[in-house]
Image (tube, rainbow over all chains, first blue to last red; front, side, top):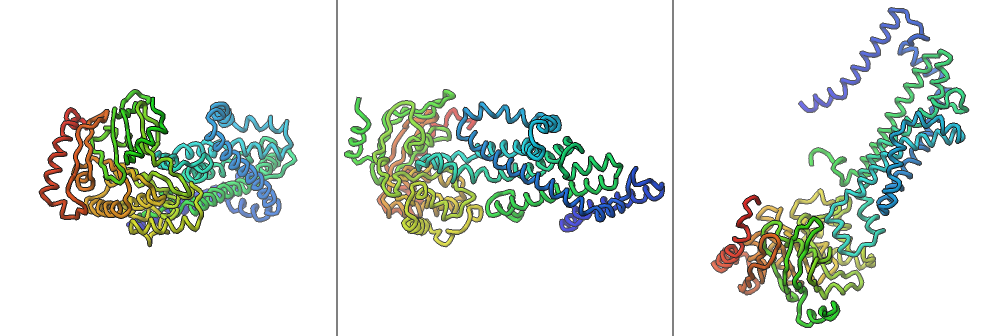
Length: 262
Length: 270
């Protein structure tokens, strides 16, 4: 029963995808729709193959931006979380601005950043702005979620602040931090794309989002779809990798990573 | 007024491990949890604090451990000054095992030594010894989630013993365990106490457990906890499992229960 259910769970989305693609292909062929209006899935795939040199280069650029933004967000978010945890005054002073940065739509900030910063830096800053908040807020939550009795135990044995941080707070916060990083991975991709779109064809970059904008102006619709597909796949892979890292790090002890038989 | 150093010397001279004088604790929300309480515990004694939930017995234990200061009165624990080379004068066992889930049994037991910067070789020796004392030598590399409730409690006990403390404070350590496991741990704890000659202060709400284990049972009132009565369990050591079924035991249990009963009157909601 449950194994049938499992197979069904994996199979059904694939069936839906295949049916959707088949319907799409069918509609385009029967109505003889031109590729610059709506390309068929096969045309998109052919474009992906034929334009691979251009697209793969753009993919590399976007991924690099995403990675840089993600690393900046991870370091910045965890570091700020640690600083806030050590000093309530700093937290009270700065946390509201972190929230403001988070709730202001990045698409509205991007044009300003592009004025004041070199384009490549602006793109990374955008990725950072979108991605650092979940890391910060999860780190803060994690550091404050320490078991009260364990904290008492550390106090009893005269642990220093640094010891408490290293042996108690950081390990206790790790599942939360990893959860934050998992969200940040996808978000830094979004941040990178938003900034590239904002820079548009006027920008000097040539990332995937830039390709989408550029292809739009050239009515090269199949390439837009191909680039979009790559972005989507990149997002899935990033999420999958971070989920895997999280699982590997936590598998020996954390509930989230344990098998159901326990 | 007598300075704390002088009164600690007095306690030391009187052979006391713990001396509380007019100790009370009022929390920030205005609730008085404890006291005023006077309590003397002689070195090497096994004393139980018995009372209803919320009577402040855990609070008393935390004050003795130095986790928080009393709102009034003095807490004297002369041993607290003994802190040389990885020793720590007080071992504490909480209601829950309170283990770090990310660390192996060995690393959990090692924690007090690591915090005291003990030498690794010395630490290893002590960890082996402490784990052997609680019968978990072969589980050093297991993680807490792989252990049963009773075994987790044993790890917690090993961690409390690893610093070779003078005083062992236990806060309802076996309350969440099934009866058979609890009886076994009771016996093991008694055996350890006989062997190691620690001062033990044991908080419980079980009359039967307190009589079985202790030399002295101190019955507390409902909140704020004060001493309602004190019983010396005179049955000579070593008491074995047969003590549980003896007439002596039943008699003590009845006496202690009678003393405890008023603490529960007017507490119907509990």
